[in-house]
Length: 488
Image (cartoon, rainbow, N blue to C red; front, side):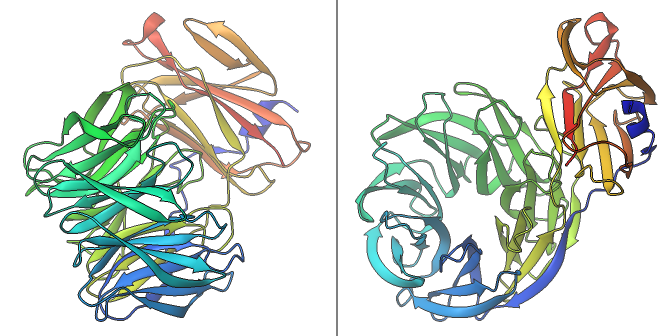
């Protein structure tokens, strides 16, 4: 069967991706501060931990396997301790997931050890003043999981080195006035994890470079823009180049954004780009693959408008406009994990003022497409071709082209054969067995969507690539990445 018959089952139309949808609202007592998914009881379902006040504690909600949660345990953290952020790791190397929680009120981190499905208070390690956010990494390459905290009024970062069995030694690095979020990643390509933190006073991000033994020094400063106040941040590879990038929730009087810095070379970043968060006062941000196209999308909690914004990645670290969803009152934190076992990543939104957790499930169930790279750059960077769908006959299938020249003629090349031939400075992946003429929109995108037709045998590969007329590109045209779909 020719590939043209496969594509003939799809019609040009705006693509509609299944977004996150509200599955439940989990009431919690007192004022929740943050949450985290982890498997407390070893049943392969993700349970939920929530920090809360009055009294200061961590509440554990067990998952019944279908995404329904019930309160199973309260672990108190001490009077006036004000538990904040949660990190999950096997800190004592016994095979169970433990919790580390920042205690803002007592300037410390408490380790809650997991003993066969029940958490018990363990070591308390001092930090500098007001530890709020937390991250984990192996700072000294000894195989133990270490911790770093952002100490807001301490104007510092504390590094807690795990010396074995969940016992920590603490050192503090002066980072800047009013330290907010924190994350770990390799920011200078030396294969050693560094740190990045937000500095509210200077409206910037501060890199802390690791010497390989868990010692840190101040590195690059990444400005966010005038009056852009950083909050929580996250690290991940947004553009598939193997380097760690940074996203931070930040806002000013006029701009509310998920600010992005893409790492391009060791200690070198492109940015900031400021895709709008879709609401007011963004506070928390997380990365997950919402549309199951194998790249990381952004979910940001907009505290001032009681919404979340979902920003879909167009494959190369640029993002579509935010889609907003209402949640509870005063959303302050986003946690992600697969709570219903369908293979896609869901989200939990901690709502401080309404004392609740909004559970958002992801109904996308996976994609049969893989990107093969090999594009030719155009006026708006490398055009990005994405595919979603399982390629089961009759199920929804979508091809989306983004970042192409606007209002331009384009040609979708289709084949059942991977030719991978050099072509005008790029690589043409499919043999040109069948062609489909398209025109991009004024935004430089194009979409094909519809039910996948029947008739292809199992494990058939379909190769796709788009060539776009583009005066700014070499030889007058740009080319998307190649895309491979495989039938089940």
